[in-house]
Length: 114
Image (cartoon, rainbow, N blue to C red):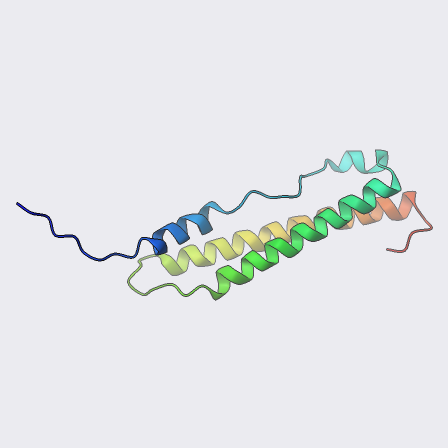
């Protein structure tokens, strides 16, 4: 018995796996209790890193939202929505971290503009 190979599109499932798996966050999480122990320069740097993380996550979310999922791929649109929602949640978390750092910087470094 000879198995016939059918043309497939392996890049679509691989793409979905990559989207579901996500990318590791490049900006590390800092414990909010340590914000008061950080210097003004460290707080400013951490705020900048968080802003980069927000931008990268927003770009990823935009790419996911604009991805065309074939109709024959069952569950593809729900995976797409789940990944977009996960990225939105990550952006919200990063914005909260950034706001906490900005508040700590405003208390500790009154001369810096926020």
